[in-house]
Image (cartoon, rainbow, N blue to C red; front, top):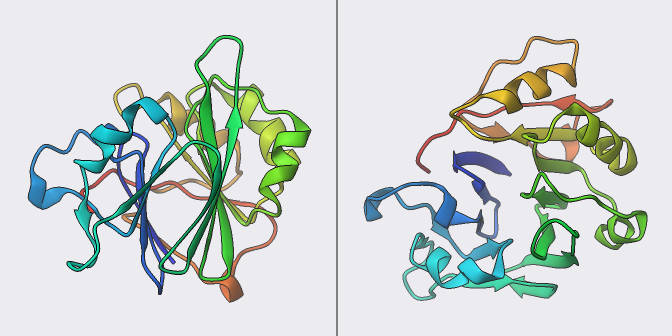
Length: 203
């Protein structure tokens, strides 16, 4: 599996069977040639589904990307996706997604203002890789990581303020260096929990 951060809350997750792109409408890419390629598009805010569809390129010419938004189970080109709804009193409903790709499960949390109940997290199952918005701060992030216990934590956030990077550094004693991409297989998952950060770039 290869993970790249396109920008905003847009990530491209490429596996052997195909590619998943999250929230492509947030990447701020304007050139169609720079849009990430996808088989499956994950949209955490259902009101943005139509916009998201116009911000990706098909990974295979013969089949346009499938757009998944809202709770439910999706299976596209061997990429399995489970969406769980979360409603917070201070925000509109959004969807948290667990994605199965290359024998690993990745969870995507795009909304930093949400709180998460144990029952909701149980629905996601065992998570190896956690991509999470860290703009809220360490106080909210630490309990979530402790509850999920992933092998890899991949924080991201507002690239203008860089507050999220300070939060990410608090998660580890090692000095963090941004990488262009994260490459991992089921057999190379680290233990204990490892924090990684990526550099924003076009996929």
